Image (cartoon, rainbow, N blue to C red; front, top):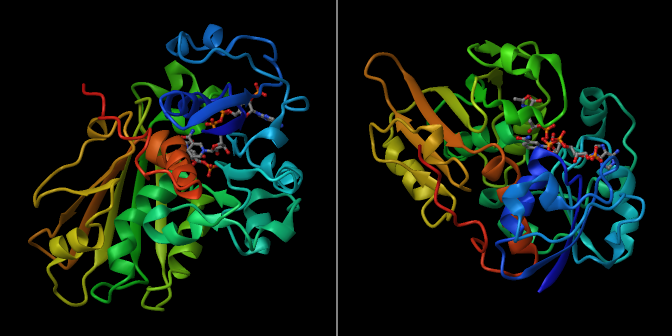
Length: 345
Ligand SMILES: NC(=O)C1=CN([C@@H]2O[C@H](COP(=O)(O)OP(=O)(O)OC[C@H]3O[C@@H](n4cnc5c(N)ncnc54)[C@H](OP(=O)(O)O)[C@@H]3O)[C@@H](O)[C@H]2O)C=CC1
Ligand SMILES: CC(=O)N[C@@H](CCC(=O)OP(=O)(O)O)C(=O)O
């Protein structure tokens, strides 16, 4: 049994971590923080957890994080990097759901996140928490940088192509479509029901911070072909609560059996499901589950390969992947506590 703490327990990824960790047989939730709601019982704020989580929110400054074996940061960018060193020095390990430690290139990170990095000495040590790429390194890590939600779906869709030589690596296109929970629980005008529902739009077309994350991570793959990666990434907001559909386009240079390329690459992966040829993956097929489902299409006209990937942004795109990483770090079976079936309809 390990003791865990969650910093940022009142947000969407925080409550999703609670849902998963409360069902995990090897975890005791020792502490969960809120600045504004310290003292409130967790189950009073989230009745879904009544009878399953019996603790109250604690002010982050008073939370016994140093007594935890694992601390999850489900906080906005900029919080984890200022607290990580003290927690690591106390002997706890960290899974950071924010972007603080995702990029190795500090200058690129500072350009995108517009602040000076508060813990540059920890950047090299942090392991990018995409188990399908970094499983062995995650097992030994003290500090895991959990990937972004779009970044997870797009990278899983691209991995077999980047690791081989059949398509042009300079002209990838990825369209990301996300539910509104991807933006978190904060109050913002564009997230109001009357703004986000019955509506569909692209955003951050000029540049989104997951672009450098995807490119840096794919570029650094040990078994990548070494070719430089070019990617156009455009995110969209769709009027649903959970889910991401990433549609990825690649220009074919040499014909191959792409279906079997994907099936072989992800054989044995507990959370990547390569669907049969011709499938159209739906976000509802992964809602509430840690699965990423992928379909590979070779349209008959032209030389473009189309890969579709769906995930739940709060599960494989955030909290589920964070628990998957915790399982690896602490030697638990990788699927423990995160093998729920998707909720349909
Ligand atoms: N939503 C998603 O689909 C995904 C989110 N992420 C990332 O995960 C992180 C959390 O996202 P999400 O749950 O959506 O965000 P929310 O906005 O829903 O929640 C943020 C949480 O952080 C707490 N918080 C805010 N500022 C501080 C602070 N200075 N110190 C301590 N706690 C603080 C808030 O609690 P309180 O105000 O009560 O203290 C709240 O519980 C973000 O970095 C996000 O980018 C990553 C992948 C997907
Ligand atoms: C719909 C929506 O707004 N989604 C978020 C992505 C969520 C995420 O993964 O953000 P981090 O990289 O900050 O962790 C966005 O585009 O900002």
